[in-house]
Amino acid sequence: MGKALIIGAGGVSNVVVHKCCQNPDIFEEICIASRTKSKCDAIKDSLKDVKTKVFTAEVNADNTHELVDLINVFRPDIIINVALPYQDLTIMDACLITGVHYLDTANYEPPDIPKFEYKWQWAYKERFEKAGLTAILGSGFDPGVTGVFCAYALKHHFDEIYQIDIIDANAGDHGHHFATNFNPEINIREITANGKYWEGGNWVEISPLSMKNAYDLPQIGLKDIYMLYHEELESLALNITGIKKIRFWMTFSQKYLMHLTVLQNVGMTSIKPIKFEGIEIQPLHFLKAVLPDPASLGPRTKGKTNIGCLMQGTKSGRPKNYYIYNVCVHEETYAEVGSQAISYTTGVPAMIGAKLLLEGKWKIPGVHNVEEFDPDPFMEELTKQGLPWHEDFTPALID
Ligand code: NDP
Image 1 (cartoon, rainbow, N blue to C red):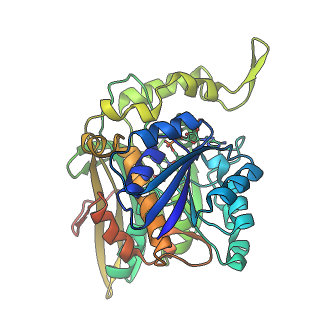
Image 2 (spheres, rainbow, N blue to C red; image 1 turned 135 degrees about the vertical axis):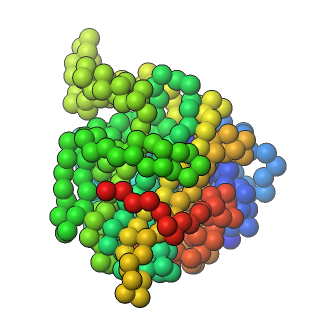
């Protein structure tokens, strides 16, 4: 049916590539392109008996001209951007120049401002509309599946949702003293930023990790959860009609928090450049270089993730509560595609979004967040492609 250019060759890309190859009728040809071509080749070499034709290429996605040259050679129908958020705009520019659809899993961020805002990408809406091209933003798990869960709940279970609590739990253990499950730089920027939630039409800002609660998560058990800002809150606060309060919670172990606190206290998480032995370096870049590569955690990680949305609202005039979640097992995802569950829960929805676009089910010219599309075909695909979901109509609530 089509050709996909997959940009980036990290943990998430590995999953996207394997999952595209499991759907060869849709993805007839793919090209894995990244800054370090040997990583693209390593992913290609890990594939066994696939029908999809797989190519690899080197590209610096910060450079629109390089991207345009590659696109003109490979002629893809869609670009699946699983590089870093810094490359979103150059890739969107290249899509507009060459007439190619676009999908990503994380919103654009300028390298020097950790803001996690959609405004830069939403500004492309009219240009994509005029070009008849679709850009799907944030088709990972969170953002991604969490937005689809909310759209699905609104379509089938509620007339109005007034509160959403997104709960992201990782009870996996990789055996390292300290490591992040996806790109360390993006992960640490997210966690060390101020927390923020939406209430009564306003954003309420709190200092990092200063709001704590506990939740008994199905198949995982009781965990401490911490409120933080996450990018899907911005689009969901706009797109879910009637919403009054929306928060995002994540689990962290005491060991993780202790290491993070020390690293912060000694200045290692700072993105402000410093001079070191005559060279200008960003402490966080240096820290990333010494931390384990998330793509290497696959064989060591054991345990489960549970990510879901807890919702409160009304149906036919009556109050209603609803919890929808997915549980993913690290060892199982590693056995299937050679990656841990965090990369898996991001890469599978990226492939699904691209599949639906190529099939014409999620093809609406413009720039859209996932909750703006029909959730039903995506929910069906989740179950078929390895991320089944579960529902609870009498969940415990969070204060
Ligand atoms: P990794 O760091 O493992 O991989 C990133 C890849 O992008 C690397 O191969 C890197 O190349 C490549 N890259 C970086 N800069 C460039 C560039 N200028 N040109 C070309 N390639 C480049 O990250 P992950 O795979 O863990 O994460 C990928 C994306 O997924 C990130 O944007 C992350 O924020 C997002 N994500 C989204 C989640 C969600 O649920 N929505 C959850 C987890 C992640 P090199 O190896 O040469 O550095």
